[in-house]
Every structure is written in C-alpha cells, then in structure tokens.
Length: 276
Image (tube, rainbow, N blue to C red; front, side, top):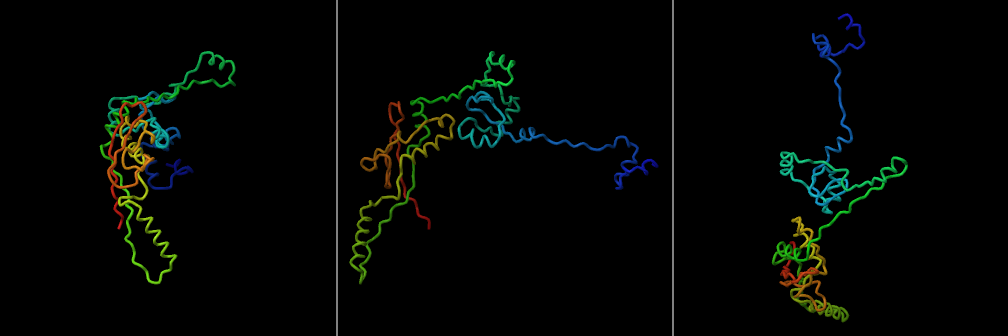
C-alpha cells in the first residue's frame, strides 16, 4: 500500500481505489475500444437485391448481391436492373444458406497475351472485356396477351365539364360596343357541345395509365407501348384520332407492330365534381 500511495497514477475516486485494493489486482487493466472501419460501415448500410439482368462485376441474373441503397433507389430499380428483396424472402434465403455476395470477376475477361505484357511493362493498363447487357424483348403476340390480361375492359378518366351559361338580361344604358362584345362571347360559348370538357383525354394519357397497370408485373413491365400504337375509334374529331374532348364512352384500338389483331377497349370519360 505504501508503493501505491506514493504512485502518481493512484486513482482519486473511491470506486477506483476499491477496485485496485481488491485481491484480484492483476485482473484490472485499461479497457480497449475498437472503432468500426469505413468499409465495415458501408457493408452495414448495404441492402440485398436480386439482379434481373447480367451485370458485369456483380453477377448473373437471379443472383443476390449487396448494394448501396442510394444506387438501387436512383439508378438500378428505375432501369429494372435489380429488384428489392422483401424481409420474408430474406429469412428464407438465410435459412437456405444462399450465397449473398458480389462477383467481381463476372463479365471481365483478360487475355493471356495482355497478362504477359502486363508482367513486362507495369505502366500499361490491361484491357478488359465488358459483356454487354442483353435485353430479352417480348414477341408481339406475347405482348398483346399481357395487355389483354392487365388492361381492364373499361378505363375511366375524369375531366371537368364546360359549364353552359344562360343568356344574361339586357343592361339598360349599355353602349353598343359592349353589346357587340357580349353577343360575340355568348356565340362562342354556344358553339361548345353540352358534354364538352376542359382539355382532353389523349392517347398519351391512356398509354401512361396502361404502363402504370403493367408495372406491377415483372414480365408485363417489359411490354413496349408507344402513343403511335393507340388510336381512338369513336368520339374523336375528324382527322385527329389521338384525343377526345367530350364526356361519354368511346372505343380505343391498341395494336402493336407485328400483332395480327388489335385490342379494343372502352374509354369512359366522367364528369369531375368541382370542389366546393
């Protein structure tokens, strides 16, 4: 105790003095703390995704790889390169001990001659072969089958009706110029049909709605549908089959290039109730 009393490293708090004076003095030692490396932190942030296509330096289609969430959210998922893995499926993968790892050598080929040159001259960079991503395009017949399955018989749209104003009473003492302008305005409004709407329902609106319905299925989302493949059969103005400007139910025809028969659906335009 005399040696401890004269030491400059003697603790000043009561709890530390009690711990030092215990019989197991040799067990007491400073605690070590370990910091997590940057690479380990990135590994904790990564999520497991399923590849939908072959991606060089990552793996083949159908394999499970860890990926940065921001890269998945901003690029891979919108481009249909990979898909998210639900939590229930993750439990099954862990139970089945499925390998979840990135293949850095996939899609990269180094020729033997280039490897020999690299040993002789370290200043030259080796040339790598990157395998292009192959896109499996659906046939026109299969695309029409998917459209028939996922597009409902009647597609509803809502638009605001153009209100028909009743002729106003004559104003006493109004000028002749004001009467002429009022009569011209009333004549232009009278030409509008009873079921006329503000704006229109175009083929672009229909294509956007159909794409939203197809996006819920992996195979159906690969159907390529453009505005030129859709046209109104009824309800359109003469010479313009791309839009309808009135309320009612009309027929639309969908025909993909190479398809034998078109797909006919009903487009129902209903009146949108104005907010009170």
